[in-house]
Length: 275
Length: 253
Image (cartoon, rainbow over all chains, first blue to last red; front, top):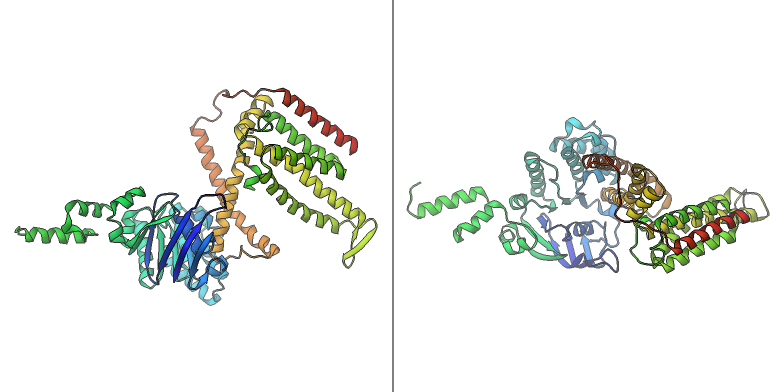
């Protein structure tokens, strides 16, 4: 579905390499986290996926389309992209028009447009503010409007650059649950996040980028245990994994509080203590 | 846009000129170009700007600016050509729209004026650090700090806004909006609405900046400056050349 071969990228001929010989294959229905410190090349890599940036060498293909030769507005039918800053995306007078904008661009059938807007606004809790001017909303609400306008396109692939920025814990969980359900419906999700708790809870595969290179690429539970690689990127494992690592080898499969409780109970019982 | 206004670090003789002299040079040359109606004079000013850019080691960057101004100038020339029907007719572009000798001469003059007037301004910004420009305005020209700060901040933020506009266009392209169309007329039509988010984010940024300045005691007392900007013999020579250029333009014009 997404194939990145020997991708290198620099902003101009004299500039240093931002992406250095990256090779990745991302299949249909995967939920991938892209992590790394600021300046590691995460956003640059994401922008390669929908042709906003073109490879200096190597290739990127999305559903068989080469991003070097396909226009971004055409790739938009296959790949939805949420920007870090919602204010870069929003410009219509109402939330309704903002969500409608992308649907008109991809020439969605007129009779389906209203239905899709109602569906996505309900899902993201925006149905009561559809007539409001998006610029008067709070940062968290604007972020959800931007997300809604991308989700409305119903693309196979969703690229989310820090989708939970500016959200409180409850809103963050709501958004991630929606993203999770979309993944369960078969959509491919690629997400940049600095929140290791969110990565640990939701993403199945994690890639660490460091100085433009892929440092780690494996199952999330394995990558989040590689303290050295995480440390090189200025990151720390989620608290539950930090605790599991300290408790020893019996806890090496623990990734959630539920698993932690089960393992503690089984260790206690096997140790002869009645629970 | 970013390239046109950003300071390029260097130690050439023009980098070391007093910023006030560079400011006067840019302003006077601009005025002289608008006064003059001589193609030769305007070409001379352009040539002089290129020579200064070359000596200052910013020729590559300046050529980018000249190219951008040339494209703009050619558009201006084309429109002027279409609306000047007087003089000897060479040929017709469209039925009833002639290309005349006067039209050609006047449109070329307009293009040269635009290029010759704007390129020194851009070069001045490439050769002068913003803080020195601010010092020259407040200490030499006695412009109140508050107003000088506005001018310098506006210039400083243009590259930021340019970057922001780029991000906005990328965001819309990602939603299938054809800002990447090759048709220039269609491109203008699709890009215009993009100015709204830029305007909104600019206003938000200005509000935040104003609050930030207030909280740090902006303009609460008299200001001093660490670096004193003196005048050298070369500054004197430069101002004589600038005045000579102005007088020449008046004489020719």
